[in-house]
Length: 182
Image 1 (cartoon, one colour):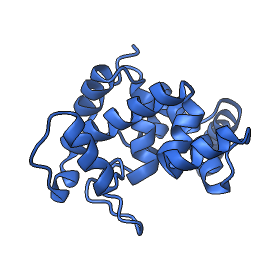
Image 2 (image 1 turned 180 degrees about the vertical axis):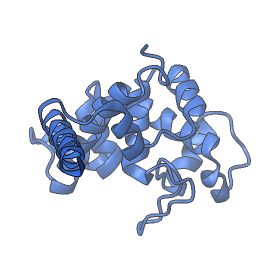
Image 3 (image 1 turned 180 degrees about the horizontal axis):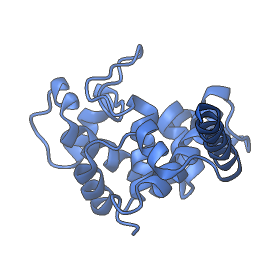
């Protein structure tokens, strides 16, 4: 009897592994692996700045894994890993007058500033890949590459862009209802 039960468990595991390999990660597994914190803030700013909410979630995940107090070695802060100087410029352009660096640890403000910046880059480059490259490597680098007729010159940035595009699909599939697709 124990052999039959063990065989049944083994068969179920094999079927699960085959389904996983054949059909990819199920949505429940993707939700475990890729969190979506601050979803109401993500949805609101995606709507306000005409962004695909899955793209916004993907950028946040890639930048900080949804950790609001994230800080990079280059000094970028918060969920969307904004440089303080960039965020201060965004604050001034969007009507803010009392910017403080600590504000970047506030999820609502960080996502608002990051959303504004991502929309600015999408409008400037009219191309998601170039906008994401500029988010990662800076506008000056992307401007030079485009002027010289070159593609993305940094392997780290090529990986970043590909990863965000992959994450965008994952977030769209795993969180369709939460992000307003359902």
